[in-house]
Image (tube, rainbow, N blue to C red):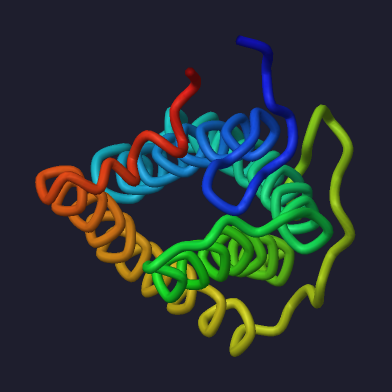
Length: 170
């Protein structure tokens, strides 16, 4: 059986599957590194984690933008959980954007492969604080949304619908 690159009404294609799992892995790395660096590290070790976290965050933003464009321009798979999907898409865009605003407004723009992204608005404490709270709240909302997404898929699988198989390679 050959690879199906594009989506159909009932199944995701290879491009969507690769976007999905790449986003999932990067987002889990982001959550892990974010909670590790803010909860467990001090001193010089923390700065390496911040650099890693920012680089993965920028990568996630680029990948999520590509994924969103692919979804908007391609065939959309019918889904009973479209609200969860909208929440996930919102989170994978809003989370790195809030991190970029947080970092750059504090005067430390994120870099990817050594290239610094533009500073949004340096020196504005209210913006830094607002972005920090947004980043923090979005992280917890995404954990809840991801858990709901997984629970929904497992429940549908148990009910015999096997919706989870639409996002696996076959």
